[in-house]
Image (cartoon, rainbow, N blue to C red; front, top):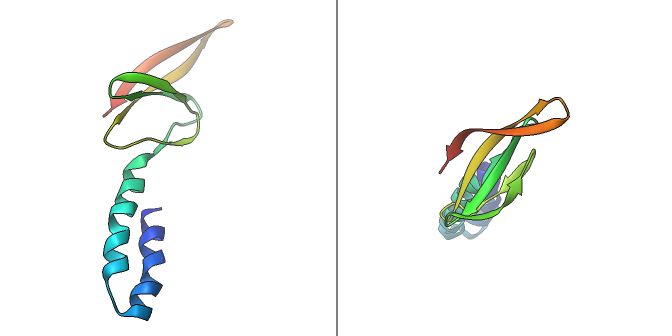
Length: 92
């Protein structure tokens, strides 16, 4: 995603001979670089925004607000008919 956003600005830089579109796309690319998170098939994620519960995500690709959100991943485990979630680590 990061590279795609930067490559999208290249034609504007070449046509206009102005590096401003490339420089302007850099913060957008950096935002998406840190906003995309992945929870694997056996994982789930608890999303906290300013240390308040926002919701559960996963297993899938999901977006967060990089500065405001924190993500805590957990593994789905099965004990007979009961499902248990075990917290394995937390991402700031």
